[in-house]
Image (cartoon, rainbow, N blue to C red; front, side, top):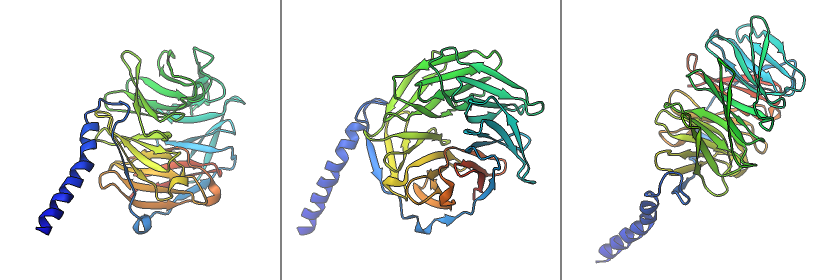
Length: 350
């Protein structure tokens, strides 16, 4: 009898715990109160260790956001040094391309023709550099209030989507015509990282809020999804199942948004609440790579999205500072990053 009472009691408790989730799961996508699960990441003590390779950039100036070009060269910007540069990782040789003083390029991406596109973060334009000639072409923002183009991504259809953090815009540049379309968001929402889904929709963090946004490219209509109250999503990634992943800079977590249901689930980073996760990207096995930038530890953390566990760690020089953005090269299975300490580096993904 005792066993029956105990079993019944446990079933009652389980039902009470499950009921709120069943109700919340019926909420429409992005609705306030969408179900959130907090899961503590498994102990990372058994994670495999990966040794990074890094190159010191002689010009300093915060080298960041490396991108692998079709010819294998790695391009990066010097945000405080006002330059674009390339790295030949075989020889270690670097080449610098000058741009206007005061541009402060925030990031760059390289198209299939080898042209380098950059954001003029303090000069209200998107520019491109022809590496063969060094020629620079600028595409100014049509509205002067869109002052700080930030992060970019190709849409695969002849366009570049970008965020403008402080100005609170998300925009699209037509690469052929130079025409720019802008979508305005409320002040201090701080659009930040950005990725594209398979249907051609951009997804971006609204870092000043607890929200992630997207835009319908046909109508330029925005839509927002709500995260936990105190979340601050900084960078964003996507796995092959269409799930949206983000680094929660304020709460020390990696989170997952289901765009079909609006449900959110998140996991503690190994470094805890003060780890300030920043850069995040996915590899070809749907594993997330996240930079921890808080406290005395500087490292990249590998999180398996399918097994929901930390499986790898790459320790960086603690004096190297923040890793702000990363790029995965599927051809070589290398994850590239820049550091505030004046280096460009990579890890080989297992």
